[in-house]
Image (cartoon, rainbow, N blue to C red; front, side):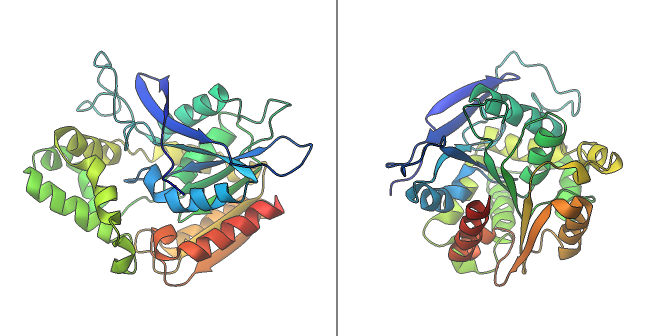
Length: 310
């Protein structure tokens, strides 16, 4: 099956968001409306990380597939030139914070009648990786989007966020903006390589695909912006409000046993906060943070089982 593309655009807060809503080639005989699976990537990734998994699910003909690049990422880096400097960080135009991303997700789902409020359209099943877990939870808990289920892959939805490198970029974004292109590229490649357990998982052009959006002047600025604008308050609001126990759908958590970005303890804490909404906690051996690349077949199996049980 050919790669799935982002063929449509949607404008929100001056961002041009590229997305693709893909229908299966055939549909099973049923009187129920076809459900939609929404894939939400994290940072510093793009929809590309979900290509194999999304194609595999689409081939089952049980769901249409929605893919998109978060505002400020991948193919959604274009923002109106008239956009004011973000009040959150005065070095950048536009906001890529979790708060802003959740607002964009809710707006995109509303644009496509996928908020779960339309009687003729079932709520979507949401697969979220990395910071997208926090984005999806805010869209659900604060913006009122209903989900059929939530599948969280190596998700950081409790505090603190990030490692030493992540904190350094947040504290000194101007330094990383000034790095010579070749040195900055080496930094980005090191970040990408640290996200897999098996270096061979990046064979077949994967490293180039994941690095490409961040190279060049605008790419470098976008990479630094999405880290510099990360705001703990966007998650703290949900934690302090004890909102996770009010999730209105079943949640499955999957964590790569070799994830060096997010410790197991944080995933377990999230599971505790979800209470009886937690529908499963799966540890995948031989998988790093990009578990869908390290163990693609196993992640497919877990997603398929989860979707069948919804």
